[in-house]
Image (cartoon, rainbow, N blue to C red; front, side):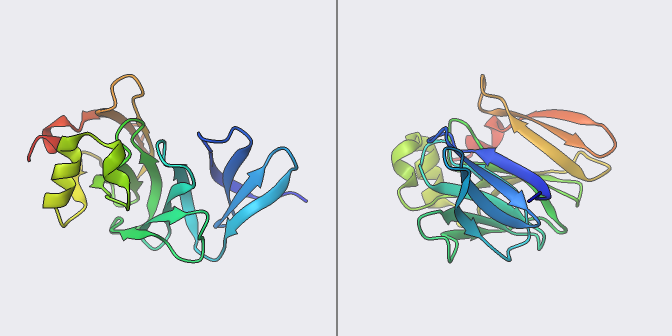
Length: 185
């Protein structure tokens, strides 16, 4: 049976598991057996990314502007809900080094930098980020609005984890640093 796949993410903790977005549902597949290992249905997902530091934790971008963090061992309800974009949230990415930092891109012509503290997250982040999370109630650190059109692609640098690139519908690529927004504590 052919599925209409619109996105996905490889599990960095298990080379045999991949999460896919299929007709707005999240499905996790075990590649050894080629069977569905887990799913979250009826959520209208646009994108998914695995937490690079914590096994079983994913973040999703959804049609209704939302960002949700899920524990795949308990998929009935999200662990956390974060503000999304004014319109659809199209892409979401965990930072490869600082797993509390999340980038989102949307059809509102913006890229948002979020600090999403989840249970147990302070053990894997530097003290400055953990302290900063404790002081902040609003997870939105900064909204980058240097775009004239919808933003569909975002990627963190793996060499320098405070830098990211984004791609908007009109073909504009923007490279930014998040360092100024992390040093405010």
